[in-house]
Length: 241
Figure 1 (cartoon, rainbow, N blue to C red):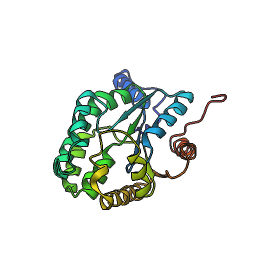
Figure 2: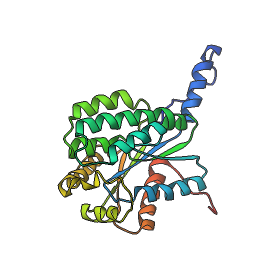
Figure 3: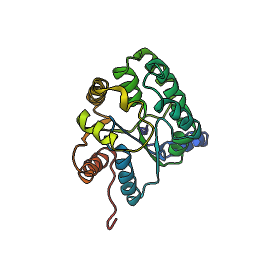
Figure 4: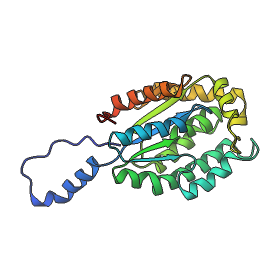
């Protein structure tokens, strides 16, 4: 999360050098942009398009995903996204998600932010609140406790929630050829609750979240995303880029 640093005095004692160095590091910290939404919303496509545009604007970008993003978290991803629908309870899923998330934060997200890079993550903590909590029924007390102990300073500067009708998203997801279909197979009612949960998160935190209609062309969605990023984070496209 970016810091609100007050202007320092013109003259300061030498003993303030360490504090000054810490302030410089804080000002140079990168940004965390998370993409959320239901199945088939087009998050991976839009992350790639935004990453290209941000690089053209002079930002150093790391793209990643959850569950996964680090070697250990990718191993847990395989446990979570494959197998029978009832392979894990929502409670157990939550524990596995946060084990993967902590490794991801320690090994990928936090180091990138400290280097001043911008991190674009396909899913983050809001997905646990929506999938395991609101849609799955895992206790929010559990999610709150794990989030408080796990996220540390890795809080999203901006969350883009890609929203589209459930039937459309599931139809898109069905066209993909992959084995990670455990959540896709959870049924229409589950995915309706999921969509409602993401909308509720956006309504509760409008300063952080922007809902992006994802039913249009990928170019139209990408333009809406760019406007949100430019407006919220003050990014401008370089001339000729």
